[in-house]
Image (cartoon, rainbow, N blue to C red):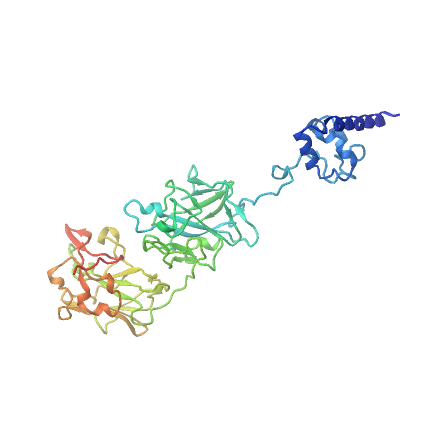
Length: 467
């Protein structure tokens, strides 16, 4: 009997002795081996015991594992389809060592997950609390792949040394799905929806522009630099998200400001607009076409504290629609009926429920206390404190006109310089604003110029008029 045959018989005999002597004992290692060896039914020799030893697979039996005959449990050809040169039952990857399924992958390439909505200027939560109502929305454009965001990181801008937030394993985003991450714990009662993860106060989104970034395993999956020119600015329409056009849901188009617009749909207990966790609404706009599509809600005809007060006049427009964003491009503004003192520029938009201002000069926070949306020509246009008729006309249709005069019961600017005449918030229609009884002077100071207070609520809801 040659040495190979003797060795084989010895191994078989020893294996049988082990099986007889230890079959009644609870041996976890043996159970694992018997249960996990996918080739054990292909050959009786696979239960011989050689695969039960890490030493046999990795050490002195290495030579036998690469041959094609004697060691049927670990051959590279023939009996054991589950074995191989990598050591049979010693699995090639940690994910399938026990034969179980591999989990969803992490995003690995730019655009695997896309930032589609940003709330950087929420309103209604109080001083120093609005920042705790910020959030961003993520979207999975894949039609087939679910991604696990576990281990990925979020920052409010690129280049930071440490992550503002690291996602926990198991946070999945399915194909075609949206999820939100927020600066605090959200509930339906407090914020209108429940976010999927909380990144906390370490990240803060600026209303003037920032660049939130999602990174996975060192790869930038997506970043949106909304500080760039062309992007809608959250600080212009506080409470409104900026959202990616649903026709542009990819990591290339969301780099372009033209692909973004303001959210439209009210979603929270406060006047915040957007579609958190849901498909975004179309970025389409319309030109006002009917009387009352826009309403004049505030008039500053007697500002104070300026060398030329005429260059600090303004009016406010309100969009009563809940669904339509209007673009005033091509419409005209006049200070009295029949006048068309200035054509309004395309891109002067009013989202649903929003307020904008048209002013006699381009206003800034430093010069006038707010940023105006459009400056009409100061020359030839002036709002008289004694009465006038500011109006908006689009395609020959008078959308609204506010003929304020003492004869019509309107407040007298000459007696309360610095304060705006404002429409009571219970009467925000183009019919109700024809009656002087629905107007009053504002009592809220919004800017002090040369020690003189200007009162009003430009680009914001008006204060209720006192009885």
